[in-house]
Amino acid sequence: MAQTDEFGEELADFVRRVSELKAARSVPVQEMPTVLDAAIFELDHVAEQLWPAFQRLSATGPSGIGSVDRQEQQLLKALFQRVPVPVVLVDRESVVRRMNFAATSFTGVRAGYATGRPLTGFLAHADRAAFRSQAAAVARGEGDRGLTVHLQQEPSVPVRATLAALRPSGEPRTAVLVVLQPVDEGNPSHSPGASGRGAPGRTVPSLSATTRHAALMDLVDAMTTALLGSSEGDRSAVLDRAAGVLHGRFADWVVADTGDGRLSRTAVLGPSGCGEEVAAVAAQDPAACPLVAEAVRGGSTALQVRPEDPDAFGRDASGAPVLVRADVTSLLCVPLPGTSGAVRGVLTLFRSGSRPAFSMAEAQAMDLMSRHIALRLAWSD
Image 1 (spheres, rainbow, N blue to C red):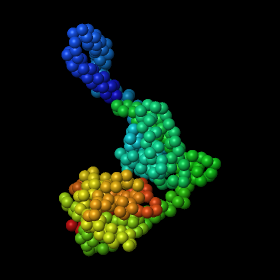
Image 2: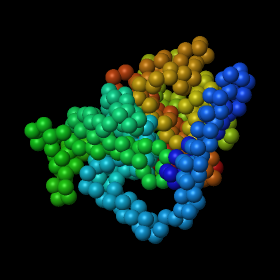
Image 3: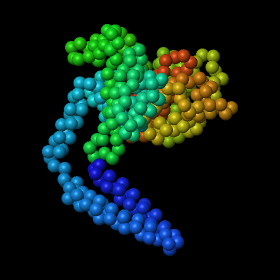
Image 4: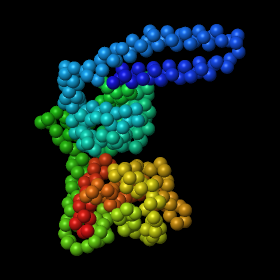
């Protein structure tokens, strides 16, 4: 596949050069010998380079990959998954392509959730720009790189990220292989075994990680109790109960939109003393909120820390960006899938002020709760 893509690029370049030669027919007669020499050179290139390459590709064909090669590829994939070191394969934009078992344990994020999302989403905000820059440089062929980063799950523990260029078989673009290792600074709490990242038999979860996990499990339990504890209520009542669980303990703002086809704003809960701001958000049209519209179209959760676009959640009636007016420092926008696959609602959560930003683990927990809420909405129909 890689050879085919290279041949296609060579052929495309040749076609462009032929077009330039055609355009050169209008040059003065005295300069035509130069154009003729260039045309002969291009014909030689076809005869000596492109034609032999085409013959080789034709001889190989799609079926040229034998069973031995396929077995070797399967073996390499198995090795990638079983390597005891956390390894992640990303593209030049730092989007996760593959993640091995050790990496899922190391980051606390399952591979299925991470695939297709930027690896920088797992890192502390201050490290993201540097990581993206280094990954892009490696993908451009500027050599291997290494830098120290911090995971959102455990920002106090430095992690060494080593980046190397890799050209996967059958792919036209260079990928980046990222190896993650905790930095041993002579402190037992920074060693692999101390933070739950050591070899089997020596795993000791950190107190902070255990506490955060227990808090999330309490939240999920409270949500389940609220959804199943009452048999009455339409969609609005269900979303009101769900928003009540999330408000305060999990998010400063909870905005619920629901409806078949066109969404309408169902519930808005904000900080105490912000009645005017709450009323302004409640008066918004969900269709005018880009984040909500994207959640409906794509059906995937959006997690943003210090949102770069102030208009990502639209503007209120006065023309002020909602994210600026609410002092939003991080947000989660979660679709509520219907039984037919179509999105039937969207929950948007804001944190503001000095409150810690949403983490990837919290986004996963919210993704789980959104499915529970969607099921309860289906029962209310």
